Image 1 (cartoon, rainbow, N blue to C red):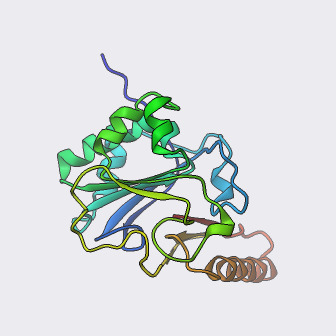
Image 2: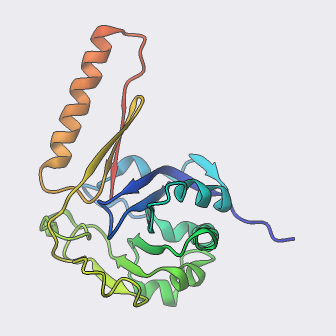
Length: 224
């Protein structure tokens, strides 16, 4: 009997245009070994328990919106949970023939030579576009789906090569999703938006504390 690994999930979002061509759903995994300075999502670096989700259950959730034509995998570090994510993609493609984009801090060469976890070859086999390399804040030029210019875009399949989407040089956009007390910044944010977002959340938090000291503070999350 095959035991399918549970995914340790930091957050999900169904239906965005900010993280690749078309309407996509996003899964951000919890835990990253790199600790890049000025990381865009420091709250998802610690390797700690978050939401535990089965790949089949998560696939159904991410594709609940019939407009969704793709998945984007981010985090955290997806390659540390490669087996579970490969299973997620397999289940998703049983529902719909989605494209898959994955971010990783590892170079592709390292993934091929010394995979950091079981399932890396399986995940790479189902990813259409891989964006690799560590985030370097000083090389953030404010353009493209990659966070900094040292990161590379690999078309591992021809699926999105002719999509017309400029992964390297397009103007960035981002979306803000509000779910109760939590606010999620989705996308590789244009320059200055991250600071504005944090300031806005701080103001809301302060106003909520002033109105009702027993109310929970709004959460804030942000990540490509």
